[in-house]
Image 1 (cartoon, helix red, strand yellow):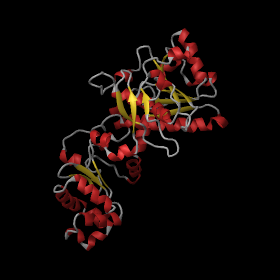
Image 2 (tube, helix red, strand yellow):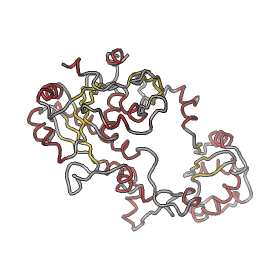
Image 3 (cartoon, one colour):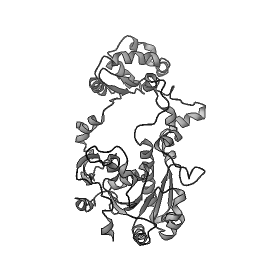
Image 4 (cartoon, one colour):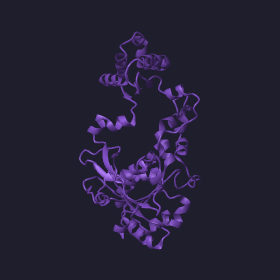
Length: 388
């Protein structure tokens, strides 16, 4: 099965013919490789003899003990064991790099020279290669040598300071600052790394290879750019005050939804949704500034109405009226959703154990080049013998 997956043709995908070498310990670097693999690049993971530490990262499947996180990050890639400190393996590693277009690497700065992965050595040996460094705080500056976990990056990027906010803060006012579930910061860093890699690769015919320095902290900061912009006018957002003047997250009779009305037409649709109650028909509320000033009052009315209606009915009617509203859905809802199935968001993936699972293909689709509908999670070193 692994061999079949390795020879699957993706020649019609946008990055067909692009060869990527990935040396990853972090979600950010691995996700960058995952995005490029989804677009058709041949991505080869350079793993240590014991395998990537991501292979044992939680959550783990109960029946096989395999990492669900690693399965998602490694889908569609190849694997070879490469120890830069082993002279016999180093020659093979150099051959791989010589035939590659992009190198994605999250080796700590202090360890790069000993492993032969410092930018100067790579540039001298492979002047054509795009070397994308993906580190928590980048490869230059006072914090370049710092390590960080996801929670550190969320707070270093400012998002952690703003959580929980809105309804969550009202429901649990004593909660300390939190992190977003999962690997939000890592995925943001991976997106930036993938896009930076492609930009540098497309420029390579004119500029040659180059070193691209990606900071996951910078990527997280970019997500909260609006909050940072407001610092210019002296406004410092805090989780206790960060919310829309009215709207936001509401508890319904059987679930939760998020509601947003930024435009006058959306406000008028919301009034219809609520049944045109007397309080909402106040002529003064035609003024968006007045609505902002009376946000707490408006939200109190909306909450009372929401608590008496089912979430699916609210969302369906809101969509008909042009009111932006969406249900908070469980993972099971998403996997089994008719909409997601119709769009073909999931690929059938075969794990190393042989078990088949559904994994998200990618956070995008191509109209003319459908993404692969199936793939494999590579066994450790499955490409090593082939490479030799």
